[in-house]
Length: 398
Image (cartoon, rainbow, N blue to C red; front, side, top):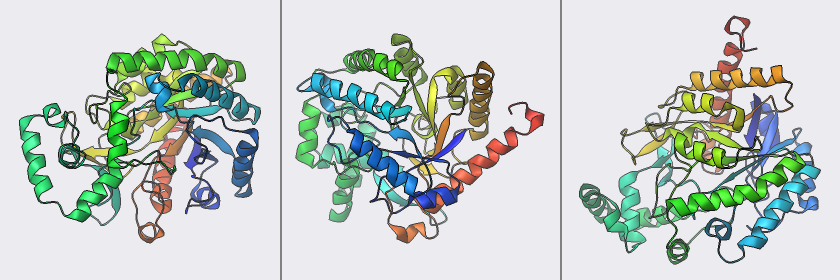
């Protein structure tokens, strides 16, 4: 695989040079300062490429070109936003970039209740606590329908949890859950979040699935034309939140998306952490089933408090948690071997060590939550060790 590293641009406290020292071969980045819905300019793309090149690496993967809420709901300026998304693909291709990640999660991107939860050995990890989330939904956000969306026991536990919360805890929950895309300046106040939720009234799971297919039907031909692979990141966490539908949470969800727009350019960002938050997602099986359409990989692991859906979980070390990382990497290496034998130019699948626990000097660096330097270095080293072992001639994957 091609080992990449997410970088949020010049504001990132972890530099491109740090990524190179950690063993990365390429960078995953985006133009977070460009407003959602606007087309990226050639000048801004080349400027980011130059910033990355100055650190000794290249821009391999765009993560992400945001899909606007207008596109997801097919309201407002969605037609112009769609045209701008298509034009951005053309301009990225003109600059030599061939892989673009995106997501179709309504309103919220990845959602955590705690961005720096302390683990058993003092590291800091991101956590989704289901009781805290329900307490936020019912008692802090005060979404009108919230109390009817959860079982009675969970509503009762959330009420007790909220009653014991300090003002500081309440404020932190609002900040953590209302955050926008990683690396962006976007974020929602409680009133803004409620307004965003109202925009989805009348949009159920089937309607959102249809809107995704409509989006892909428009952008995939452009991707094919300009030689770009687009790849959908899964829901994180992989179940409905705040009354919003989720449509990329399971193997069946991805199968539906890929069958409706059956083109190699329309593919998957395989995130073992996002999908791994559900015990009913078999990650090695998913990697094997969709191997030909996997264009980008996030490797991370989570430990679930229970195997129910939904559940609480935290982001564990890369080789801990519920996902068999050795089996997943073996499936990906087998696919790379098959692509090489076919002569495909995209035979090396870009992967990055997704997220990471804050350890050692990370604890005082103040980097983007989930993206510490040393925690990701440790994860990348462990993942590379698995890969090197599996590529030994005795395993037949070289």
